Amino acid sequence: MTEAETLEGVTLPAGFEAGGGARVWRGRLTRLAIIFAGWTVLALFFSGQLYYTRLLSEKPLTWREAASQQFIYPYLWALGTVLVLWLADRFPVEGRLWRRSVPLHLLFATAFVVVISGLFQIIYFFLLVSGPDKHYGPATTLQWIIYNSSENYGIYGLLLLLNQVFRYYRRYREGELRASRLQTQLTQAQLEALKMQLQPHFLFNTLHSISALLHRDPDAADRMIARLGDFLRLTLENSGALEVSLQKELEFLTCYLEIERVRFQDRLTTSVEVEPAALDAPVPNLILQPIVENALRHGIAQTRGPGRVEISAKRENGSLRIRVRDNGPGLAAITRPDDGLREGLGLSNTRARLEQLYGAAHRFELENAPEGGLLVTMEIPAAKGAPA
Image 1 (cartoon, rainbow, N blue to C red):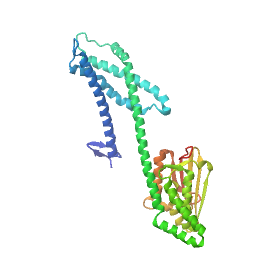
Image 2: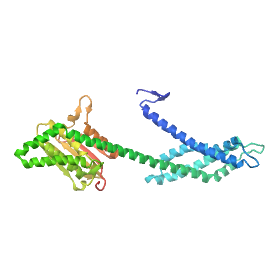
Image 3: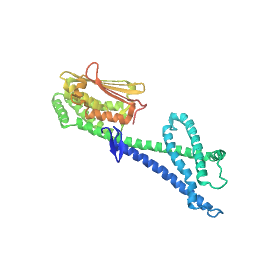
Image 4: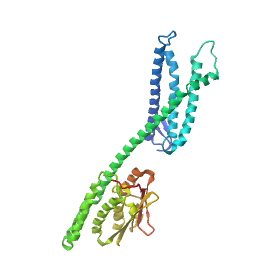
């Protein structure tokens, strides 16, 4: 999009997304239409009530006379509703903000009582009152404001309550949508873990290593078969869980590393340093395997010497900090001259899952370690207690 773009005859500023902007404006127009439609229904009801009440009196009103009186007040409040809802969103009465918001809304409600009642009385007097005794006095307007103050305070409070109800409902729907997206991403991560690790060459190398060990070291071969079975079992065991304890996540990672050690033989050494207080901290299911897999594929596999992967975790200032470091070429292994840093599917999926789960309350960074190699740092909220 260059300097401007036209959408259905409306000129949009530069950088404005046409599709998103159109949806926003459609939403606002729909909201305005609902507000005015609601107040119109009330106006028609009050008009009918006044018309039939006066029908049998000495001075009956025509429908036009009844409607001209009863439409003023609802339409003033229709305009006021737009502002009330904006104020309700701007100063929500919830959480820690209610102490500040309640006095402000009392002040706003008083302003609405004065303005709407005053405008109604003035409009009614100058447009509908006729006769030789017609004489406007400010005292009459003040008397009308005081007389109808309780009704107007009630309308303001009701609009504030309705807005709060819709806010909670919107959050509930957003929470359901977020949970659905997380479940989809978890399923994709599990399938990706199987796809990345249980590829034909992976199984071939693993089975080949087991076959070689059967004659040379039967006990080691049995352990490898058991590890492969554990790997498959743990991958599918928590298929429905968004989060697991760090201890369970490390069990899965241990099975994976045991299998990878067969492929790298003596070239791969690992170090896991996790403080006991961090073991029960909840972490996203299958969050470590893609990070370690990246270290092995882009770090250890590209070096000729011994490879080392270090994993550490600890609680710090209410957060769980997990670090994975390898002694490979660092960021250079995933950096392309033409398009810069290029994360693989595993890292990009990990970043997206953390964003969906924790929003701005997490940190996920890749950097060159001072000692050499790639250092991946992940910080997430450390909730108390282990997940089921």
